[in-house]
Image 1 (cartoon, one colour):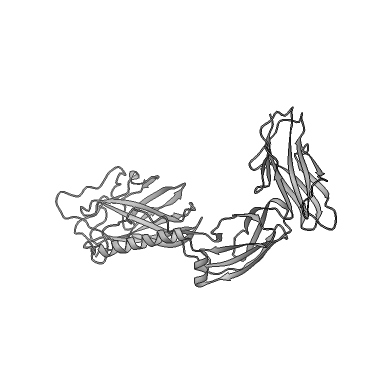
Image 2 (cartoon, one colour; image 1 turned 30 degrees about the vertical axis):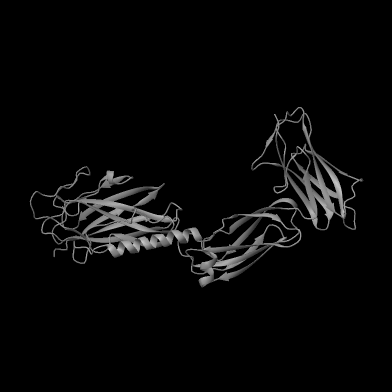
Length: 435
């Protein structure tokens, strides 16, 4: 064989879902006799001898698991096993990308010559599956188009399957509310949680490491598992039905992607390490809607702390009900006013029921937003409820204030501090639009 060294480089970069390809062939033993235009498609000669394109190994590279932002490369070995020369070209129309072609010898790859195709990539899309390709056209009548594939999975260094926003719902007043979370890594074999920081001392968090089957079970996503099982069965059936390649001795003369040309979207990286977090919500949380955070610090290098947000509400020993026509949502602890004219103002009445204690209940402090918001709390002396007192809570947007729209992420609020041992704070959200 003639092993004149020739290098073929294909450079792939994922840019906003696109693909950039550079294809170059250079001979280090002489000056190329002339370029091949990128618009030319090699055409097999009318009569032989023909070149025969062979890939020494599979034309598909599985890189396993990589992280977002990482770069990789792989070298495919190719050769011409035919008695005639082999011409090759990479065309821009074969890719949804930019494609530049360097110089190629006029005779292409001579019989017995070997070369390499190097694919380089960077993970810039957080999608779980990664697959891109580069096509090379040849004048081999049996292999006019050869597709080289690079495939793999994109794993997360630190993640939580339930997501970083956890809806707790309404806390029970008779028993402690708990939530179990699992924080894990798809790329790090082992790590330690060095600190757990809660934004409220009433939220207590403990952790324990998970390994083996317990870790797999805790992080299992039934939908993903079902999809992966179907994919494995499909590929196994296809593999059993394929005939051995008859093209190139120990090599392969074609590159066939999967059933749909892509990796199955249900595939997920294997979980390598993780912890179970037990989150306990005690009675110290404010009455009404709450939004608190948990910050998880680890010893994983170059990894920012993970922040999990908890959102829910608490009724506790104080219950707030709306009166007819009042837009009060007890689960959200949110009062919604209908649209009204700013010059007329608006007023709403809520009923507040408070469990009796040895010390008469009272408001010790109040914070309102916007600042012109007014409130008034009046005890109903005629109420004879067993073990409870009733108060009328009036919330008012005074007439003549500037038009305001509060809703969505930006709402008004009324926060009342009290002397109740089990309800130190009451927090109400307020939405309204005045015009």
